Image (cartoon, rainbow, N blue to C red; front, side, top):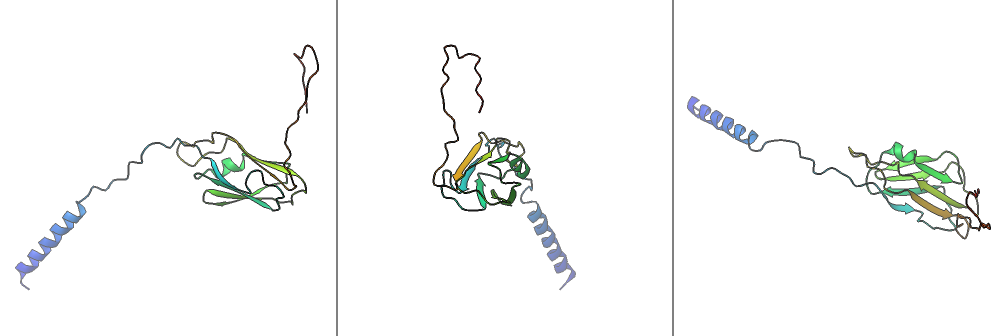
Length: 160
């Protein structure tokens, strides 16, 4: 090959490299609108209202990723079974019990509104969530009813 042919090949290679590198401006994506959708629980196991439940764990699935700590600090189980253990898998959490459940007992797992998603705004759940299930053959109503018999009921305080 002559010097002239090498020079032409080198010039063509340089021009092609310059064209390839300048074809598109490389910038990060714009990101879109700000997320304002709060997280919510979209699936549970067991389903709410389950009776004759036998198990050692519950599973909740969220509509999006949530801050683990905010969730773990917002969970309450009644009656309590000791310190709960949380195992995460994407948007789902498995709640494991340290002790066995009591027979013929209605349990209510409550998740408060302090649960936040992992977005920059940290949207909180818009409403608390309650999961009631029973190891017996029915769910307790978890309510107390009664009447106050007094002509003037103002100032009456009732405690349970």
